[in-house]
Amino acid sequence: MNTEVIWNFLTTQGADFGLKLLGALAAWIIGRWLISMALRLLGAGLQRGGKVDLTLSNYLTSIISVLLNIVLILAILDIFGVKTTSFAALLAGAGLAIGTAWGGLLTHFAAGVFMQVLRPYKVGDFVTAGGITGTVKELGLFGTTLITPDNVVTIVGNNTVFSGSIQNFSALPHRRVDCVAKVANSVDVQDAIARLRVAVTAIPNVATSPAPDIEILQFTPEGPLLCVRPYTHTNHYWQVYFDTHKAVVQTFGAAGYPVPETPVAHRSL
Image 1 (cartoon, rainbow, N blue to C red):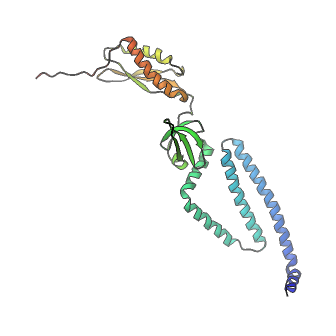
Image 2 (cartoon, helix red, strand yellow; image 1 turned 180 degrees about the vertical axis):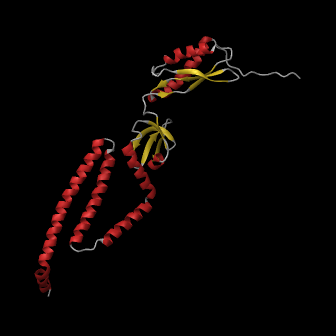
Image 3 (tube, one colour; image 1 turned 180 degrees about the horizontal axis):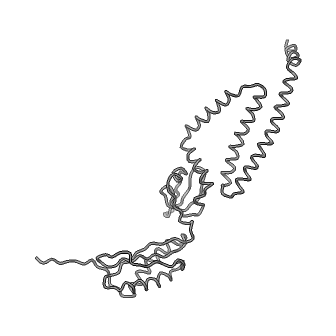
């Protein structure tokens, strides 16, 4: 009975099935060749710009490879007359379920993709991102790892970073150090500015161009408040910051300036 069924199938539909089998085999070979070529071109294009991290490039290539192979398999099934509408609906439903369950994680991944391309900062930069200030240790697909100034490892989700403002203190060659110094009302302000300019310029790692800004910031009851603003590279920021304060104390002490005092009005009864 089985032999008759097989013989009947071969005599009636064998040729058609054979043609479909050959067509499916040819579609698989040509489809795999086209997919591999497309993936090579995609990988070369991502690496040529130098803006996409190698990890992200491989990850994107893998995802696209899976999607293209699924499309190829559905096309081959369609050659044999298998209705692929149900498969497409199943894949769409599975994608929706995964997207709903991992919605938060996927938003971090999507933000990580944009950050890998746009590169608002790189490893080693000193930044403020997602409300955290620190040195970038790693720019991952889902989060950015920062080392804060007090040496604490902090991981910030990329979506949190990308949805807020980002300050990159290492993007420019120089950074301004903001300090202040107050002199008494009896002190010659121009003399104090001249002395500070010499002392601050002599501090190691202070940039000569632009030159330090030392000017009157505002007037207070105790005396003029001076802004003392040298420029330096981010790597030397805190060294220059603390040395500037030391220079203010030493300069004013060597000049014999009196300590600013708050005027007191005496009221007679």
